[in-house]
Image 1 (cartoon, helix red, strand yellow):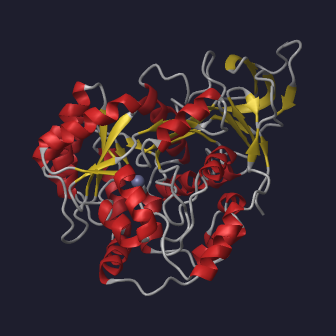
Image 2 (cartoon, helix red, strand yellow):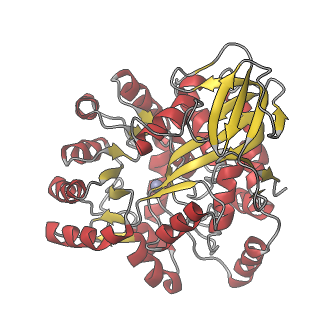
Image 3 (cartoon, helix red, strand yellow):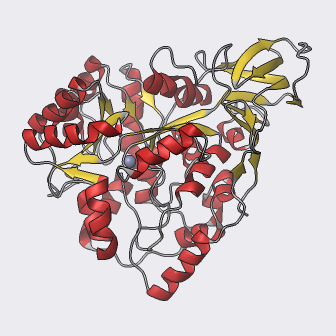
Length: 467
Ligand SMILES: [Zn+2]
């Protein structure tokens, strides 16, 4: 799902812009030249592949950004700083495989320019140390990926698709055209989407994108519940074949059960959503399972689209920590009167609540890997904190907290980095992207929000809230 900035009265828009742009201290920071070595003492360690907390306490030694030892307490590690974990739970840094780091979580009827640095900081604040961006401005997102990799910007490790391939007028182009004011539309549309009508068009657009070295290709196949044009199976096959020829996997946004089937038959390597408004047919579950195509469940973003929050208490504490007060207020304000297409989308998203949960359960029992993606920064879906919301909803849908956390760490990491991924697990030699939590999120998923430390590349980040 993608939705961004938009319309409201000019005076109010200026106020919101002023609030969004005021430079207060960032949510996270890293001191220049900060050490990448530390000993975390007396922690409980989440064993991600096994989805359990290992017996007893451990000391975890980090040297030069890598995990050097995981040992019984009392390990001697001369000369490096020590932190007492006080029996808290240490997890691998969380991985979010469905994000839009260049979007804004403000309601789409407000013109708020996305604050990319604030989004990136919010992911880290919430313990999300790696993200896959599945639709963003091109080439801007690839420049940001390079700035993060070089250390010029502070953010989670960024994998990016760039633009979204779709049919002319297809999703998300139809949403962007409907909501963006004219003075943004001309800029955003050609950077955020590739509207392709023939296989030759698609091949040409992919060839033109390759110099940016996208990590995956993203395509959208979603007629909504009505008459929005969408890619057919031949076009999907043309895009995935061109991607595969260049060594790139494709990730397909789908809306319905038939669209999921077409995506898989067309060769897509992962689904960016389970169907959001209806239940998968038995045939669709069979097709997805037979192809071993992983599915990003994205319960939260569609719940938010169908049933916006109305009270402060509807937000998780960590959402209020990363959300600036004007954003939370904007999300709680009653929406304007929608046009019929938007009303139909909201109704369908609300009506699909139970079907989405049944889809997760049926995919799991068919052995389909369920990956964890927040789809932040869609409206109301806060960067970083949105992954916590998604995890709590996956637990509602029947995953144990341990299984949900294994997906959001080890399985997501393997999706991005392959079998030999050097993140997503606490083991010797892995990257020291780590989250220390008070309490036991494997027993109570809400404890995941009680973060006391986030380490990126072995460095302990300074964290502060917006509140
Ligand atoms: Zn999305």
